[in-house]
Image (cartoon, rainbow, N blue to C red; front, side, top):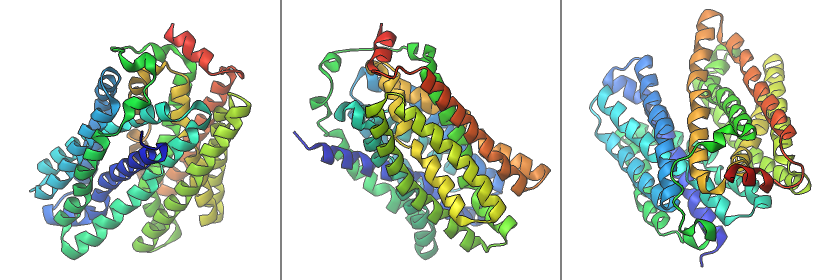
Length: 402
């Protein structure tokens, strides 16, 4: 039997590739704009192509994973999105770029909805948030690597090279993911199950509140990640390169420290009280929103870093709450549905609405509205805590399964 650390490492490596392939286009966007004479609106549509296919296809992928084997589904997705990333290098204009980015989203959907299920099988309830948080460190590190690979290699060798270098490792890693011995950890009651399609978990108020909170976080973080360089340039007068550097550093530092801290705090609290994960997310979201406002008033990078640190507490913890509040045979479907709703009501409309208010007033005003979404998230997690039995979460799962 392979060690649990090895399995977690492989899953982290795949998640690293997930966010690297996802963000490499950000690093080459200016090259694409120049070579294909694209408007900013067209670049935005290319980004939306990925997000829409990723969100919608996550649900069918989750259903398939619950009926078959999650690691196999994830491996197929990894090979598909890595191949699409490599083939993006052959693009000749807007439509081919749009197609390959949409195909990248299809592949990534197959992994993101299955990984939490696999980690949920490998690690017990009381350690799950921390392990999911380690897994989710792929977001800041992989995302930063994608931007760096895109910009640096694109500058030196052309944007085509960036996509090839970013995509090839994933095609090789798919073999290791396919052969992960996940069935050794698959619960006996699921060994021969064929759960089919069910959305019974959608009737559970804890699940719905967690998804609402997830969407509020996604709205705020997605908008900040997109608009923060422009905010620093327009409102603080920083050079474009300096604004980009500050944004990247804030995300890496906040993501690294916040994800780990949130996971371990939530698990420690969960062992004392089954509502501990909800309490952790309530506090993290509330402090993040307040930190954004203070950072804007004081022009303080420290408080913007703190805002990122606190909002990143959700990485792993929110996923653990989704597993806590849904029946185990439907974990992949529940995760996939959460992904769809979180993006549909979060980071898909968030940056667009922020841009609208920026056009109507100014970017400073628009960014100042973003804490409202994360404070709504804080309220959702607090409300969820009232509905969780302080004893054993398993009672929620049992009632759902029945």
